[in-house]
Image (cartoon, rainbow, N blue to C red):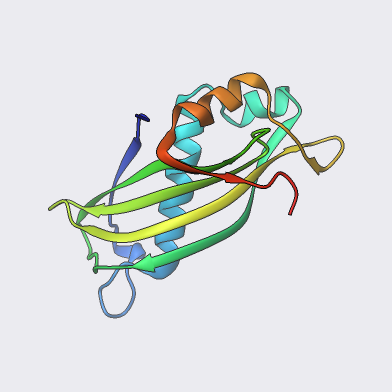
Length: 148
């Protein structure tokens, strides 16, 4: 069973739209911040990635909105690897955005990859980064093709 990473947030006044709902773009920004925090906690902040000659890039995102979030509400975003290529170069992370009452507000699926900064190509990550991704694997993790 994987260890699911979670990060908490509070909806700020500038996060909401004219209807008082959390703006759609903020869901993606919260997911991105949670994903980067997950990597940082695993020892792979931006400096460590660059030192290893790597970066992580986003290839696509899909959002499913389930319930509203409002100003000053607390929320948490989880990160769980639900897809990984055999070489670890491509990954899919499922983010569940949860309300403080425990109900899900949204589900975001992010497809990303590791790139060699010098070659500017998708490539297998350093072993430690791959281990961090493996540690966050879901019990039902799909195998992603290394090349589309």
